[in-house]
Length: 113
Image (tube, rainbow, N blue to C red; front, side, top):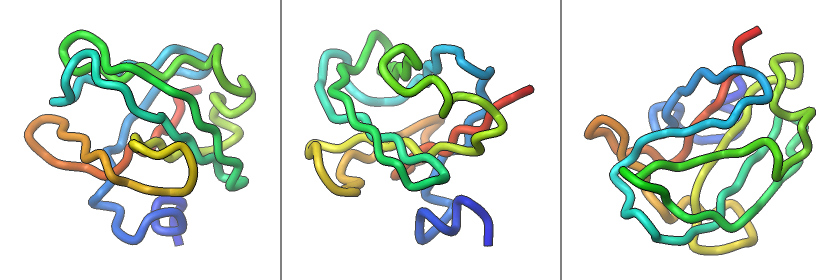
């Protein structure tokens, strides 16, 4: 079973994103600039990180390693599941993320060398 299948019921619900290690991640979506949500990150060890975030210009979701444990943003630690929610606690996928006209519940981030 793949990482995606272990953490979500349907891999098609997650957008696949390839990022550079320890770099800021910026993803353009259809979300509205200025809206505020909780940004959730789940690592392969099922450690759950949550911060408040604001949607940027052009619907941009920004994930800055500065606000998290830096060790999770490297290839050897595996993929990350990222999602937005209106709730701070739990794994509520209540904010759909549209990227390139396709609706996703979450984003799976993999890292380059």
